[in-house]
Length: 411
Image (cartoon, rainbow, N blue to C red; front, side):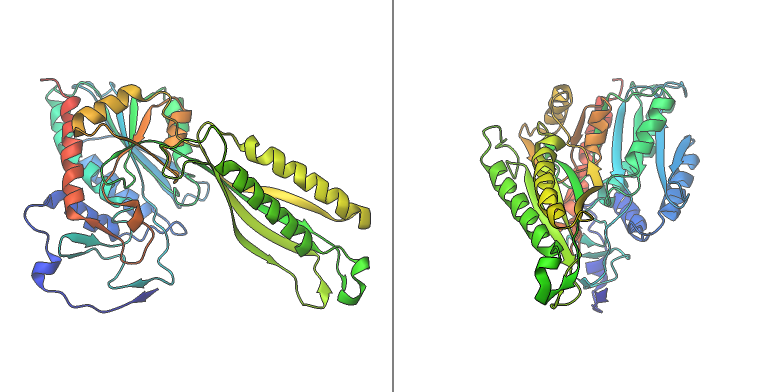
């Protein structure tokens, strides 16, 4: 990480009174926890857990196998009945952030700084801004519940390791199933500039290992060149990606209207004068919701079988492995018409968007919970140096969540 020392006046580091102080204070607090995916998120989770307990709420935690990361799920029950927690609305967000290694930041990425009308810090946009607004909403929600005015439960779900494959959310969903809790709806607060995203692509990441046979480069007939065979497979992946762009069932509403395949890394070989015995490459597949893994896997596996047969004619011990490293399901809009209508009515914006990035939303929809994505900030700011969220976006999110809460309240 590279940072620069920048001096700012008090006016530049203090939020304008037009913007919501409680949410900004919470966001500042959340950014202060270094929750890069390779680190523990327990300090943040324990801080939020303590806050929820002070509000009189029961908190459920689910842990990873190493017990160094946790999800948090908390419910404000409907009415005065603490047992009335089924149904309702989930506000979902992830607590992990991407690394800052090698990025040139103008200030400490884990110390929130306001400059002008923007708040800077790792996670400010993706997606601690939404979490901050949701936490700020809890006291008012508890008051409504205690007074018997909350007609449907409000749940908050904070997960770990979304950035490395949405690993935490399935544990929350399994726990809800075990407790016989089925929320009516879910809103994932990824940054959308507070517009409504109704669907997103799935993502699957694969590692391909091509095992050849070494030989001196003057005796190529005695070897099987792993790099050469890997290059043939890479070329096939690229040609398949081209085919996807012209399918008749592509969806023009998506920001990228076709499923994509992209080779990301490749390595192999030890010296120019040695026929390489190993080459590895990785690729990712981002599928439209109506397409399946098999639309990509079946042709690639057939090509692998063809190439493997050629290799093994020269050396039986050679071959090609295909290993899946990550998989996040697409989020469909097949069952969320009612939720879309609610959000459109609250925001006054009826436009539906579909995006290429993935979230835990697909895991919620796969579990029968209609889901949309709507959160403060722009995805274009995510993962970058000097990540920021506009303070006006935090204000818009606060207003949106308050309207959402009003829709769950008895008049």
